[in-house]
Length: 575
Image 1: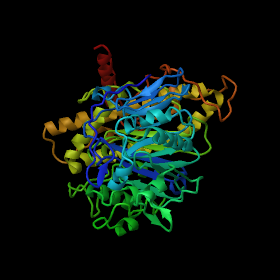
Image 2: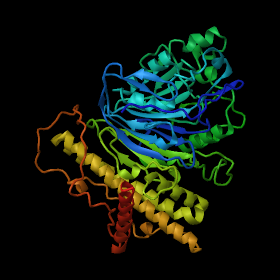
Image 3: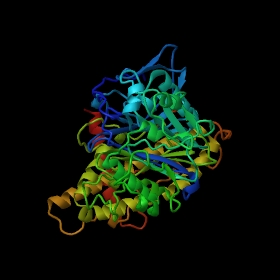
Image 4: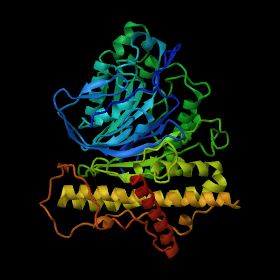
C-alpha cells in the first residue's frame, strides 16, 4: 500500500520562548516504561495513552509485508517523502479512521513488526526559543507523528536500529514536530527525544528502573561518548554550545534544560506527579510541582515495589484517587486517565521465546479507566477482528472502539453508582486474561515447534475470538446500563456479567488446540512464519466467554449479545 495523506491540520506558528512541537494539542499522551528487573514476571513494558479527543475512532489492523520497486516513494500529506527499501516488514498498528482526512494509515501510533520490534509514538513535546531560532522544526517535509510508526516498523529489525533509522531521517529530512518515542525488542528498550528540527537524543533504558512522562522533555544528563547506551545527533551538543544555550551538569549536556522550555504546564505537572506517586509513593510525596521548573525531574527512578502486568495497565487509567491530586475530587486536575484517550497500549517483551510469540501487544480501545487490554501477538498475527475496522466518526454498535467509548461515557457520569461494579468486573476479566496468557504462551510455543505457519494462523484466529468475546460483554454492559438509567434504577448498577461471573475463554483449544503429532518438521527458534491469510477454523463458532460455575442464563445472555454483534456486522457489509 502506498500512502498519500491530505493535510487538514494547520501547523502552529512559533510563539515566544515556548514553541509547541506538534500540530496537535500538546496537552496529550502519557508514556510509561517498566524495566524487566522491576516487573513481577521479568518482562519489559513500554506503554502510552494516545490522548487526542473524547470521540476519536481508532482502527486496529495489520499492514502486510511488501516488496517495492526502485524509486517507489512513501509520501504523506505534510510534505514528508522517502524512498521505500526493496522490502518492508509486516506490522500491527492502531490508526486513525481515513474519514478524518489524513489518509489511509495516518497516526498508526503503536505496533510490533514481524522482526519483534515494538514501537509507541509519540508523546508530543515542545522546545524553547533558543533552539527554535537556530534549528527550527521543518514544518513542510520533516517527519511527523502522522507517518513515523509506519515508516520505522516497516524497516527496523531491532530497537536500536529503529532509533538509528529515525535519527538518520531526522538528520537528513528534518522533523516537523518535537516528539518522544520508545522502542523495544526481546533484548533491550530505548527512549528517544526529537528536540529540534534536526537534533535528537536517545538512551537505552535501564532494566532496574521505571519511567513516567507527560508532554515534556524529560531526558536529563547524558554521556554522549557512551555510544553503546546513548545515540545522539552530530550537532546535539555543538549547536547549543556555539549558540550559547548549552546547559551542563558535571560537564555533560542536560538535554531537557538545554532544549526544553523553562516552565511546564499544570496539566503536565499533575500527570507527572500522579505517575510518580503511582510507581513510588515516597518519591511522589516528595515531588514539588508547584514551584518546579521544566527539566528538573528524574526520567528514570526505582519503583517502591515490583509491578504486575495489570498494575502497568491500570497506570494509564489512574486519576490520583485518594491523593492530594485526585482528579475525581477536583475535576480541574488533569489526570493520566483522562477523557481524551483514543486508545491505550502496553507492549510486553519477554525473554527466551520464539519470534512472533516473544512480544504481546495489550491494546485497550478508548479510555483505559473503563476498558480492557486485549492480548495480541502483534509480530505474528496477519489480521484482526472486523469489529476493529468500522471507520465511522460517530457511535455505531458494531465497533469495538465506539462500544468502549460509550461504556466510558456512561460509567464516568457516576463513578460510584454506575462505575464501581463495572470496575470490579473489568478488573476480574483483565486478571483472568493475564492469567490465561501463560497457558496460551505454552501452547503457542508447542504449535510453533510443530509448524510456525500453523502457529501464526491460530494466533490470528484466537485474537479474533477473544476480541469478539470482549466486545460482547462490553456491549451487554452498555445495553443494561442504558436501560438502568432510562428506567430510573436505584442504588448501584450491577452488570449481569458480574453477577454471573462471565469470564474470558482465552485458550488455544478454541482454535483446534495443539496437534498430538507434528504435521511438519520442527523449525528453529530463529525462524519467522511467512504471511498467511487466516481462514476461520472449524471452532470459530465458539465465541462466547466461558461461564465456569455460573448459571446457564449467563451463557445465553452473552451468546445473544455476540449474535447481535454478528448481525450488525453483516448488515454493515451489505450496505
